[in-house]
Length: 84
Image (cartoon, rainbow, N blue to C red; front, side, top):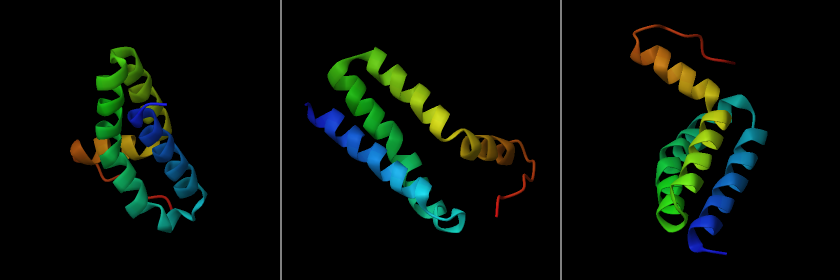
């Protein structure tokens, strides 16, 4: 297995563990994972091609759809409700 796929696998395991945490404990590690995701996807795309990178982008958007909606709403100047 290539280094990029090993790192991506570890990222997925970390995301799974973060998803099991209570909501109030998910913010910092979830934001960290969201920031690291483009680097991991870019590295995998560099080593394995743009189709792998495209699959990674689709997976990222699927996993982080709610935080991404929240961020887009904040950028539009809206004030969305934070889940409790």
